[in-house]
Image 1 (spheres, rainbow, N blue to C red):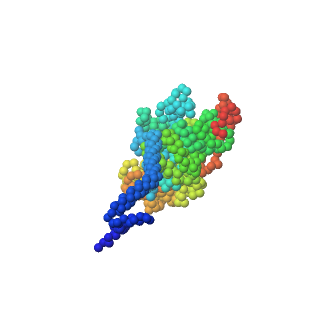
Image 2 (image 1 turned 120 degrees about the vertical axis):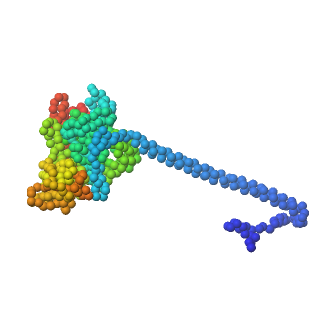
Length: 579
């Protein structure tokens, strides 16, 4: 049974007895069933009604603030939703805006499909990244004509111009180190067959200055650099005059030092001795100056550019530069507007990924170097790659660091403890083909030469077929054989001591393709002492380096040849490029 007082769970109720009116003093009690009781009930009901109206009025008065609170909350919620929608929309617009700024071209556009080379993964499956960075001298816009000059007769030009700045940026497979190698624009080399899809101009190939390949498109410049160095090129980035100005402004200027007063009457750079913050046009004048530094050639310009870029890297890595949203927007907008990239880098997401990879490398492990050169025997005003450059190329192609554990350039040490004490440039190998497949000896010999081994390396056919690859060495040549074996990915089981002098490699049918032994660990054959010799190497953390002003009469003022410092003193009325 349920107790009569039970109600719904949690809401217990009680039955009330009929109400009995309270008797007032002097009033006769009303008899049951008389009109007095009825009248009393009416009065009670009237009083209850009035009381109810009062309670409802009070309730309405109490409800108004509550309803106002709810309206405020609803307004805040709607406003927050709108804010989130606007923020998300702005983020999407910003992302699409930056993507729309970028101009991209296929890496091998108008060239052979294998013209850029292919990276080799390390034992963990990681691959390095090699990017060709190009600075164009093209006057393809009114702003470039104003900045670069030279348009008074030609006007705004079409085409890509020349690549007056060429740097190969190498980021190691494990992202622990990086190398930036400059290629002087005056280098004479072979330019392969190319076609510029944008302009329709083409070439069947020729021998000329390395920077001229850009006239046939950025992919042609990539193919030319890969052919010259043997370094696989994964991406390219191209920047023009106006781009340098925008980028330097976006980071708030770049600090650079000169060791003497300098006035380059050609690039118009004028600076007093000491350190300056270079912005806009002043930054462009500094990186373009070739007559102001060194011996007045393109070599002096590359050294000054390394100082400028090292300073820019330090600024990127400094606190505040990449954590300020306004600064990041300005930098990203300037960068994407200024760049032409290959399609592999043709999105903001990919560029951010690249920047993240580079940011992982400490400044003390980023090495700047300039390709070693020697005068061109056919033209004293031009240069060609020196034999030592082969070691530098091989070091980069084989993903070797040019810095030691301390972060200093390891120019005074060989690549590894097991490396030969004889420089690889002096190690010649006789390569014999025992596979029966035409061209195998030439391919492997060519790879050795590209990695810095002696040009006296020769080829031929083995006396008969060989099932197994062997590297035979003469008395006292074991260390050289080990160096060659490491270059090719051969284990020690492939080495044999013989009676003849020198090194003889017989390629067997266990190695029918490629220039690295299948399953081997071809690694670091080049020694870094040879790689950095005469390469003017320095690391990005060297903040006290100053550009060396030329002591030669490399400039002219009012028809008189003089040194850049003499020109500075004579140009009293010309304002300095930076305070």
